Length: 304
Image (cartoon, rainbow, N blue to C red; front, side, top):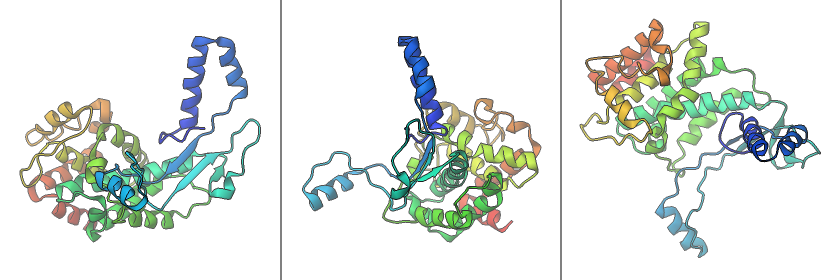
């Protein structure tokens, strides 16, 4: 049973284990394929990076020198596919949602929670915030996030059995604004070339296919492009943490004269640069970010 934060984690585990086994012992691989189950799961709990202050508090309160205590929010969700070969424990008794298909829950998390994290990240940094709860507690940011979730993220989801999506979205805003979690904007901004294509761009493509609104999602992509320039609105350097950081920053720094330079990377954005409706929304936000900054840009977006 995989609890990795990966979509289709059980399917991926099955492929990896079986492929490895087949290299060592083909009969073992055949037996695994016939007898072993790898149920998919979805886990959700915000766990920010452990700090020295966390370690010090554990030592003070409990007398324990723990080098890596795991700090997490009160909220927890575990959704598990009912795919077992020889019975299973009664996971339901401890709050696990045992379901036939995990995918609707995965997409709910990816397109509402994870994509909203990206929505707050770059705008938040450019506006001067460094902690997630500070940005999420700003009414302007909260309105922007809720509008994205309601208008663009939610329409791309199939029904999620047992989940009240309105209540779920309200809980996300509360979780993001929890001052005790002290999650950092920097954590959300890291590894964006891996996160944006998985979490946000599927929303864009689904909405483009149905003619739905894409303005807020396009704005998030534009805010990433502005952030990737590596300099904030006060002229201070931004450390872009990404395996493609050099390539991203080089493209972003050309965009004041080549506005679509960042979006031209087809290995990340595919054919979105060819969609006039998306590029118009993207360029409108990028231009606004350059002219009036993040906060004024958000004000126009939530009003429009």
